Image (tube, rainbow, N blue to C red):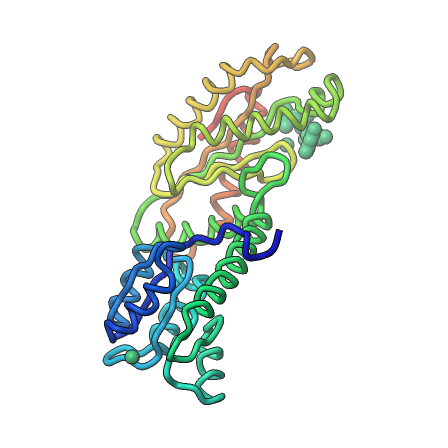
Length: 303
Ligand code: GH3
Ligand code: MG
Ligand code: MG
Ligand code: MG
């Protein structure tokens, strides 16, 4: 298979203040890609934020906000900073080209454009973008359970904490620890233990279904459910649904002193991010409640 055989169809945003240029680029790309277009820098930013294109073809010289300013604004936005930009411009000097690359452009195409060259470069950059997205996803995913890993959890906790602080909303956290899991491994074997963690991870994902919720493997047989914009009452409801979901699975645990089935203990904490409080305090609070749940006999939660 050659690189040209890869499925690289994407959503491309074409930005140019001249309709004839948009038509030429659209002619080169339509059929193979979904093409959106904007005739000003301001409109380009709006579309980039709202439509999340996979790639942007950007004119350098435009009235109002020019291509360089658009590039700077894209790089400054957390939702747009990873969208690759190819400058398409009549400017041709090495200085123009290096200025575009310094502004964060992935590539540079001179006008008048050749349709085959545009198609080829777009394919190349879409492929690179997909590969880097896939690598990034790997660095944030737990290899066994496929839920988010600790690194992803730490990043999201920080980001959601700030978001909830700005919006004056609560944030909740549930720490979930499998009961008597050492005994489970000892009795059923480590591989069965692994399979069990996969099932627990899937059950957590079924109950934490809002887009802003994050299920992560916090470490070992301990999971975390981050619940932005949810108060302790909402988190308690979710903990009860998780208990019901696990009960339905009926994962046998013959050597558990707590129950014939696999159970979990949970610690729930809610905070209103403000002032000097730090996200680590939320984890500490949930961990302290988890300890209480274990001491209270397991298969329960504490708030
Ligand atoms: P408790 O109810 O107090 O939580 O008891 P526990 O046995 O679950 O707790 P402990 O911390 O003593 O043991 C945790 C066990 O989880 C020990 C470890 O082997 C197991 N474990 C951690 N990560 C994995 C994993 O990836 N796969 C498997 N199979 N077991 C794991
Ligand atoms: Mg122009
Ligand atoms: Mg543990
Ligand atoms: Mg445990």
